[in-house]
Image (cartoon, rainbow, N blue to C red; front, top):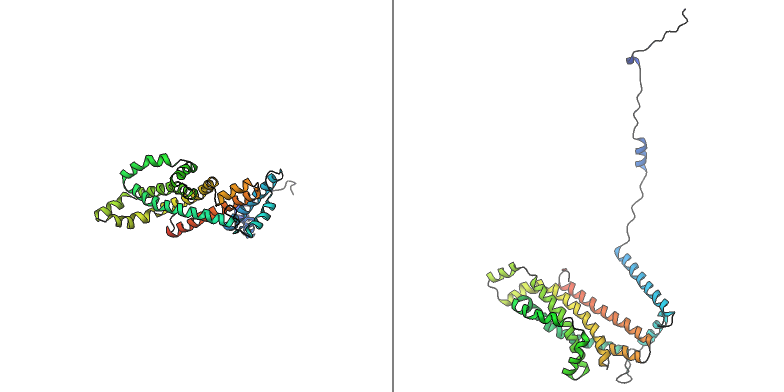
Length: 297
């Protein structure tokens, strides 16, 4: 027997090779792991309440920090004084010493008269200016000239015309509330497509029909925006006018408390003026949304 070993190579077909194809095992196992449910964001109103509360807390904290220097009363002492003040808001100890409730009601009455008169004049005038080009060209330089005039600049003219402080303050409210209603109403009329008016002309509609069926519904959102701006101006103006005219009113009350060096009462009046102004604006926003049928006003 030979010492050299013979090497036998088998035919490839005789080999049984087991081929293993890597399967999707690891991936399949990964898919099997349940994913955590996505976190739902908090409702929008919750975020809004948190933001508003945070803003108020920051405001009060800044106020308390500034009060430590002794220049203004701290929030707690003002709150205690407000509780005492509003425990009897309608007392009367004479013409110049009345509760804060009477002063607020007097200012609101003046605003109602002046603002109502401005609406009665300004809205129809805005429709006319927007409807007729000749009137628009006539009014443009007058409005551009008088609209930027400071409200208090009108007060001496009012005192000269009416000889009394109360109608002079109402007159100032009237003048200053007039411009937003005229301008916004006129802009709304100009935004109406000319095709609508051409159809009305072809149908031979009367001017009253054009106003009630085309102009008024289309202009209503613009008009209500002007009204909302005007009420803010009116409330802003009455405080300044009453400081100068005296008598009864929240503006006069602020000035009277300054003369008595009651700074805590002045701070209370500032909050009262802000709250009443916000309430008036929100009331008109509600009316605007209700009558404009969802169209932004």
